[in-house]
Length: 180
Picture (cartoon, rainbow, N blue to C red):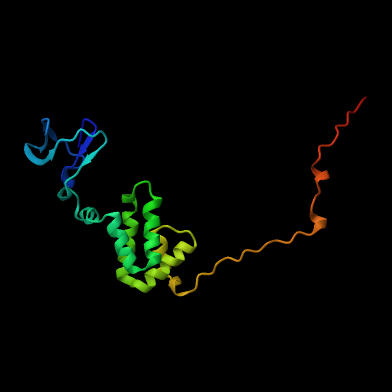
């Protein structure tokens, strides 16, 4: 619910429902069909959000308990590759919260496949520049974490002199005029 460019939460079951608002200098009360469904401390921060965790669905409440530092602390317990990947996921997003789902997906994969396999899959993902839960999940599903990561060989092409055009090739040519 928006009041003067600040957003206040309502129970998720009321999203898109019409509500009534009563506010003072310090309090915002929200009513649905005459019943008070939320009370918030008033905020004047434009574009800000005031949220009560109980208003979120259960799945979102679980995300609310996580912070970037808590995610990174967990990832460190799995190993340096998992920690590095989680850090990269959080840093690659405009807002760290946007990386929570991927990182919590890594957490679930760790519980399912174990520390050793997750660490190997994260190493493989990082080797190819992947920054997502989906990539790590695919690596684990296909057992690619059990195969060595093949790093591409850097091959310097040899150039034979007869195939190199010299500077004279690139010099501007004189224009020839055709007179009738």
